[in-house]
Length: 327
Image 1: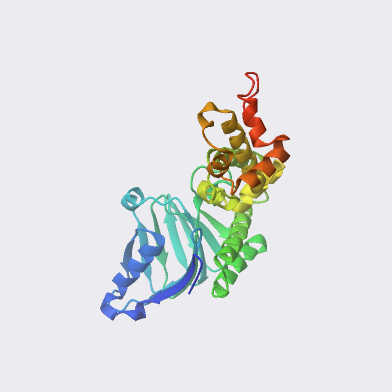
Image 2: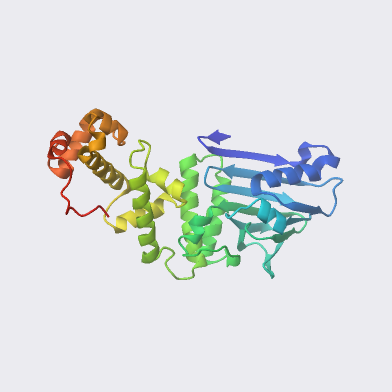
């Protein structure tokens, strides 16, 4: 099943001959989670399966398998880098995670944020069924104001953690009903709550972080103002943040993604109208070259913002020498 860029699919080792099942499983896990090694308790009739949901931003997989060890070596981490996190939560059975000299034993209602940026081992007990959700690293490191990956156990059986676990279960249960936007929206909320849980009682998006997001977004909007496809969602995706984070940062500054983009485009047009290098371009050409859909849309917005029309601004010539630069 697919909706936009949202895909739901499944596979099981029962789809192939018994002697090919271990290799079949390794190929599918690698294609969804990245390069690893595998050690099986048996390879003659290995039984496992998975159901995955995926958009361009998130992926949620529920899988079940007989005893197997997943190994990501230093060579894997070096040759196939992957900074994103995996939120792992057993539904039944047990997983044992070893990473950075630490061991975490995961049972139902106990989750873990796992990074593929450093080597690890995960031992899956027989008949274990679990979830693994891929989360972009900036969605975790940004709100928690971190610059390096980490691994930690999370209580997903009580309080806020139980809500996170229920949302993950709900995402899986309703997998055939979502659109891409809906799946990402629920995932965004879940990750925000996950960050709150990981930070304890601290706010996951402190003012200092929001100010940093605002500055980066403003710079990106200025550098890409002429792109007619620029939007809040496009900026968020390019910068590795959620749209909600971008909206919150700009809301704190008293604006919105749409208003910021319009402001940067208007200032770009004003600068170009004053520059001798753009004298040869008509107002219509400048409008299209600066991200506007028409010269009339530009003229209306320009007059509202600056009190004069574009043509009058061009006749005024270059700006005064003492005019302060835009911040």
